[in-house]
Length: 594
Image (cartoon, rainbow, N blue to C red):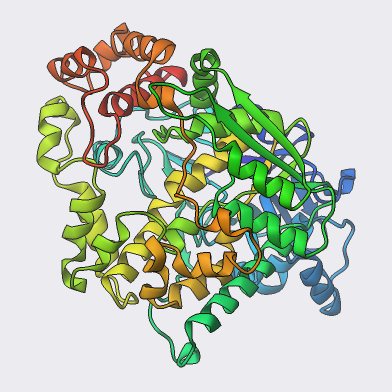
């Protein structure tokens, strides 16, 4: 985990170094171990470093390779960097460090923009070509590492977080109506290239952008698996699929142990994180550090799942750390979590992840986490409904099942100047689902969830909350080879046993059956679910503030209606509508957006 920033000018002037320095400093939590700047001609780069691979100063960034005439900044981890280094050595390249950053530079020198095809891992990078003045930006296949962009007259700025771009100054902070439509319809997911702010965009996952010195650019999407039944897997039985997926997950988990520091696991006690622990134990890892978080009960709802995480920790004899958070910490913790958000996120477990990451970072710098399995292997309760319709009806069914509210409902919520002029959320879903390469209705839904919805909800959530404490989170279920294999898996194997059936079968090979067959759990946060105590006070203060009234996103009568019955108004998916509205306003105020 690191933070990168930079600027390229197109108007013949030098980059604004003070602005790049401010952006870089805003990224300090992502990289507490080092800071660097570089500038040549029209390009400036900044970097904050978290030391995970090559802990020496030889791994510092921005990194310049005089032999190749390249300077780069990098965020993430290339899990196959050692193998690539050996291969590149065989092709004549010489190395001055043992860092994966240098491998990226040499790979670009050898293969150009095709270098991304060789990289196994999570990454965002910027590479400046000294001779041509060209800038190359790239993002990993599943969008695990973020890259935000601000195109302004005469320049392009980029950074690992949206707040870092704001620190640079000069950003158009007006609300993007299309993004607002998606935020209110898709459970706060805003798909690339949009963000909630008109002046900030984000590079899409699996995309490499080449920016010319005159400002012209071209984007290339370099990866998209087919969600079809492929000939090479014909004749595979359910047991064959179980074993193939388990083997692929073994490889993914092993890859993510690559580090020059200790690697722990975030253990919720659910199937996904428990599988990671089991496979690490199977591989012989000893003294594995595991971490769980829970909250006080509220409104009769339990706030922890320690029974299951303790069971797994005991079974595999891990060095387990349990954190119980009292409810009176939530209002303060909420502010910290909102400050860490690159974009507003309404899922309750964002606060849990932030609090957990604070404690975990006291013990380790790197953890593995179980995010992604539900989207990839159909683990959510709504997938059977999505699978039950013909392929051509899937966009409408998806809207009926997944959307928080219909397009027509937004006129009751929003001031006229904040309304999109079309049903932007349905358009997004329809466009993605109509693309070729998805065989069944469920295939189309899983493709959308994996490559769009997941990227800008759980994946972003984990990145933002861990990074705020200088903690690197690795997600083996988002290994691109595992995703490719899962995409080809027959839908009925995923839907079996109430969802993720094929993964449950794999889990029974290595886990206690009580963990595999338990009810599905979440990070419960009762004080937010029920709008209780200091959280409700914080919500009321935000929505009645002068900033909120002046901004005028929501109709006053709608806000009054929500506040009069804080726990009564629910989205179609059952989320608290007041929380969704208030979180957006709190995020805008926290980041100083007028």
